[in-house]
Length: 193
Length: 193
Image (tube, rainbow over all chains, first blue to last red; front, side, top):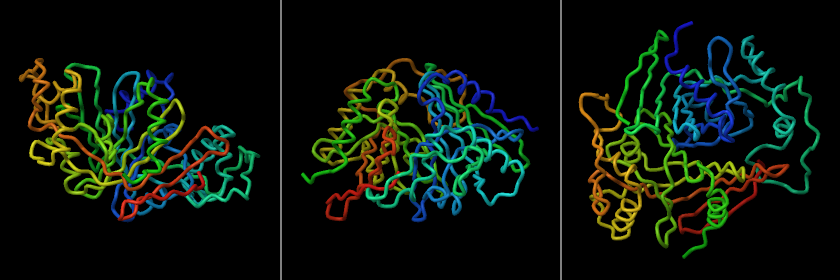
């Protein structure tokens, strides 16, 4: 395992902010088909075993998954209000879907599905996200089987290659930039905030 | 003044979440020169009088202002933890800098500068953001004049053209999409969450 310089700080921040309602919320930025940026809130569900890749639950029917399939490089912004620090994680996303065959991805997808709340799983039974809503068609209120992911449930697995860590609490503030080279070796540099 | 359908909901959300530490924090997504997305946290400083355009304080020396000058279409994501709702505001940014001559922009830039805290103003005296940090050079601890903005202080003024409003608190959730046409007329549609 290559040392990931930024990961200990990130895990410490998650721990220190675990009591806040936004502690595991992340804003995920993608690029649309027309080249414009797009950003929405997702939940950090955990890290892939061994590779420590952060992952988020999603739905293959959403525009964001379409965008990622076309432009897999994304940036995730994690702001921690308790400790007043921000991590920006840039890198490439792999979509772990019902069609994935990689054993690690299949396992992670099944695990996240079974660990989610009934309320979160229920949303995957609803009609296509982003389409006009028809109130005549009632939404299901029966959560799906926790041991059998819905076909369009997917994990977005982020292979982090760049990190920008800003600590606002100091005066002056502190900021570091981390970069991963093609061989997977990390380097870091303190920069002006 | 053309009716902006989404604005009352957005102002209500700001009001209802005014006590939370993240109540005025927004994640602003831009596109980099290499076509990849970029996202960081900024503070919503207010709305431009009459046009109701949201604006954020920034520094013309930052990469984000460079990115905006090249690709002025951005998306801002506002997540409100208290009421569990999200607004995504897409549109074009005007950079109100020391070179701006528009009286409304000049006035807003001066006002935001004078209303900011000494701590926030102080950051504009620091060396170029994002450059390697040299600890031998001490950062200034004397806040600049509140009545005379630093030359590289700027406002990012967002002319909102698209809005996606998601309410997570309902079961099922509620989501609306708003769109502004070329004549400045807004239309809205309820969509599947």
